[in-house]
Length: 65
Image (cartoon, rainbow, N blue to C red; front, side, top):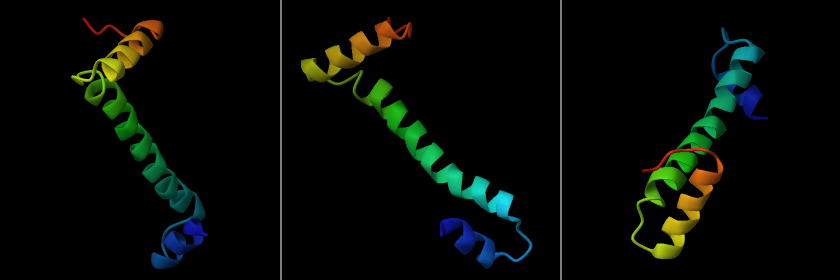
C-alpha cells in the first residue's frame, strides 16, 4: 500500500525506488532506537538501566570504558 502511494505521487519513480524509500523509514527508526539504547540508557543515572545497557554492551564486545 505504501509503495503504491509513493509511486503514485511521482510518476517517474519506479516501484524499486519506492520500495527503497519505504524501507528507509523503519531503518532510520531502528538506528535511532539503537543509538538511544546504547547512549541514552547507557549514560542513565538510574542504576538498573545503566547496568543492563553496560552488561549488554560487554556481551556484544562493544567497549564502553
